[in-house]
Length: 407
Image (cartoon, rainbow, N blue to C red):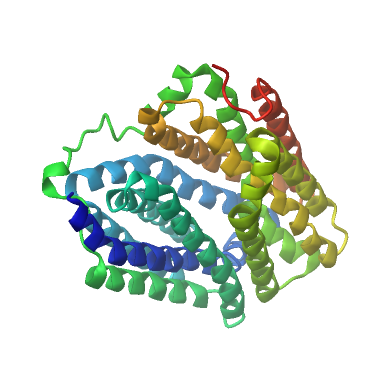
């Protein structure tokens, strides 16, 4: 693409990505406070709700694992615009399907469709790479991350308010937001990938397991990949158990849970947007990563042992230190591969995260179903897992003070 064409695309492209990111993540966040109670209504028991919530989350992650590389390859072949628009329209249809769901199997179908359509984020990141120069890319990706965080802050809070009107109302509003994103993209979004730069589709490149080979070819990455797996594994205790636990342990309602999730999102935005850079400058990547993992461990213990709703909310603050771990972990991994392997590394990390997203929700849903009478046990188990990750991370990067790979 010529520089002038890239320049002409830049403004509408970045505006679209930001608006669409906010709308899509808001749509996802809207249903977080009300989906677990709806699952419980269908399941008929607290233990059944925990197990089914885990299964539905795992279905979504499984579709992400299978479809993200496929959708990325399709966008290389047919362009970013049609893939993004079709996925956004599909997400709107998915929310309507879930709003009308009469049983758990219907919700399961909705989660499968949602996992497929949400894989369009692969094409969104590729679009941003098309319309920015390498020196602008990190800043552009930061803007995408900020849009996602903003959507996640606003979504659960609004979902909590709407949930007071009925558990299905947020699904209809989510469908409206995704439809708005589709119409906005149809009118505004130009194509970013010219015909001459497109690549034929090949299943060998769309293989979700292929990117994992990079981690085996660089022995120093293996331990850090294990930290990534354990970090994501522990984090899914929030997506599966947190909302159900807040309802049952403390008697909170949808509005209160939505506010708590919004607070968690704000704290994460502050930690990753403002704090992590200052801490890295002071202590380096390695120490900052370990501080984040230990802080997350202590936060999980605090969540699991909180005796009152006030302490439950207060536990979000030490848990926010977890936000220091992921960016520094990724930084440490990028230092251990060549420049022409960075994209493959991102794919490998997404594959590892997706594997955790498939197994962890089922595990924590099962634990919750067995331990409804033992408050906080799921969070304490997650704390142990994250402590193991902190230990592995500490020893995997002990070669130098700042965590850089040895020559």
